[in-house]
Length: 313
Image (cartoon, rainbow, N blue to C red; front, side, top):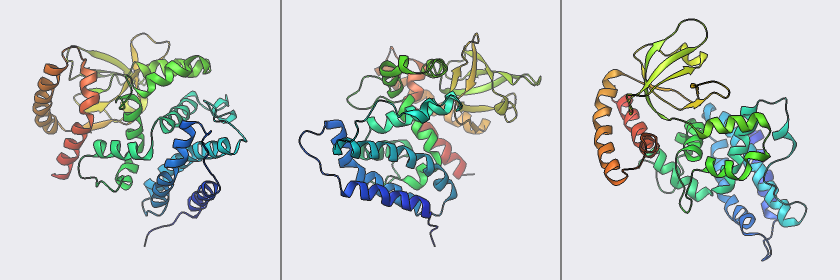
């Protein structure tokens, strides 16, 4: 029997009740009207996830629910004339006691939700997870376990239809100088991310967490990384997918943002041949693109191949 999270279902019911009393009129701004129109689909997906029996889904749903409440409640209040949606949520995002990482991540997640719809998220989820995700289902039970990875991909890697730059670039253009200085520094480092496939070439066991990694898509590039948590799991010769970002105030020193996905040498040997073929096709059509551009585009294909390799063991 599926486990029911009563607190989450109560919050879902609250959102349903808000929408039931909300009537759109012609003078409602288009972006607010779009939120109200697509909210029922989002609420339905939240309810399905709340009824799942997967503890990981329930855990990740907490953050998703919070963002949905911010967006939908603000839109409903805007329609009722009580309050207009502001570009940033108020006090909580500006609490100095909270880490700049947490504050900035909440802002970016909110921006993502404003710039996308449930329909576009379903389409992106199918692309991210592969063709095995059915048209009528967003694949949330599979995706929820990778929600942070998916959100990072949508925000930092792809360019959505009708846009000319990544969402994180758009957010920086609109909001960079409205942010506290610590968040500005963090955002600047995230804008210069280097997602790719790496190999550890030197691991200093000195307690400072610094090691050297080689970009296998650009073999001449070797960067220094300081990440104490990764130092404990990565050894010299390990191959992995990661997203290094520059450390603010440090000269040519990086940290790892998000998950690190390791692969065996055998898997990399097979995958590298396929990546070589994809790369040849890609750069014939995009001769001015970077290796990072290529990796961002092919990331879902690479992850699908890794999942297949793991399942075949």
